[in-house]
Length: 432
Image (spheres, rainbow, N blue to C red):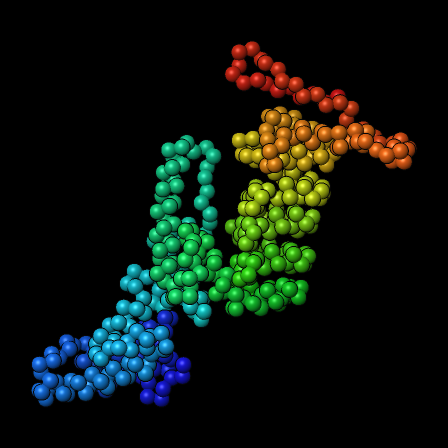
């Protein structure tokens, strides 16, 4: 909608510019001696014959007209049926004026994300709420149930407060994008991914073309862009560089990222490390692990598999060896979940018996722990895992008998022994 030549503003009122708009319109009405009809009480109908009322009516009509022609389509529809400049002004203020407890003076829209995000982040930091936006809720395995419950209640309260502040600082379109989320972090990441893309498009263009120099120059000017997302997939520049196999860009980006940045996930719940491990990009994997050990145990949200499990399932054994050498043993224990048992199962079906033996010796309990797919590790020792245990056709048996296969191990014995009166059975694993 075009701005009328008689309007008091250069930009019609919409849901993103009320503060600037109201200043301009009020200044104009003051200059024209019309502000008193907006600020004061309305005249009573019985005074219609009075000269004062006639003067008020004329000023009211002029002020109302100036307000009307300074409004956009939505704002105009709200005051279409009013005959009072004061009521029109109050109606628009109620609809478009940022709430008094909002963290910003201008609601978020497609044109003001950078300034908006700075103000909201500063507010949340000042209120000690930023931590729930910056990282996911974390639990300590050593906490007892009561302590864990107290921590969750504290987190839930802070999360709700932070989410509310973000919501009331959003315009109509932005609000619709986070309407169904209950997480302040998810709301923040969603808005950043959608509204920050245009500013950070040069970074993604440089990554797509494999131009690290241009990408680095952009990040020098806009360091926060290291966490920018693609709207459709929520990919970071690092995710995109891995997908495109731009190893030099991956190394450069990782150097500029924090440990928290490396935990970022795309829409399907993949961290950059999980993506590189699943594809077998060993140098990329090493680069990220050197930067942060904390990302080793982060599972994918859809299948709950960690990076080393993705690598082992896809038989990228060089990646598996690299990740296994730096994975803390406690992360593979049964009390940490099904990850260790699943890894052991993958070792066995992949016929990596040496490393399987090492893992069993470190943690015998894994033998009797179900993995992610409801299988015990020893189920990997099915006949089909060995050529001699598979029914072959005549010509296949002839070829197989001509092949000499060295035995990695000769026998595997798994036994359970009851040691005295101990509450639990102890396991004895022997390899010969």
